[in-house]
Image (tube, rainbow, N blue to C red; front, side, top):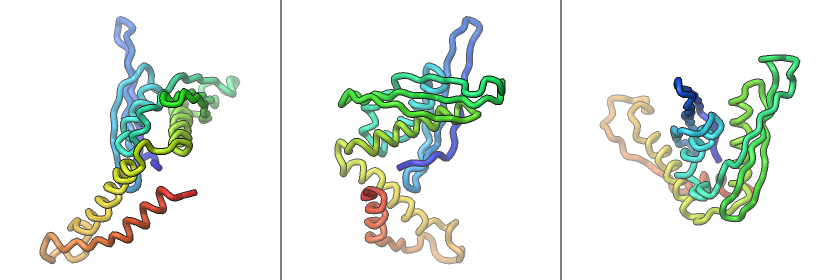
Length: 187
């Protein structure tokens, strides 16, 4: 589905008390790296919006996914600032009105939030069918194709730098089909 490359969250408050948060998320879908930035009402909302923005290109059905609530609880208050926290998020599916909760636990509140957010998104992707299966398959396939193709013709990946550029790109469609089947037909 996807995996985290990196994330960054920035929060700011001005003299009048106005607050805003910005999140930058970099994720991999297949071998394609997608970077997205979003602002939100608090760091968890900003993270959720950035994750959604990064993934919607590949999974258009995520447009129906809404972060509805987020609750944080300190699990070990006696440990003061080294305490573990639990983040509970609530998601809504605007297409079916379904509601579900996911949880993340960590010493780092952003890590716990990321765990809960990504578990909620993965749950949604696993339990729903694509609006247009071919559209999602093609989006991920295009990235897989591009990564295979770029590896083949990129001169930085060649051991003999004296050969004529660009070399003939040899692409095996069966290899792409096998990659797609392994990603989309896991039962």
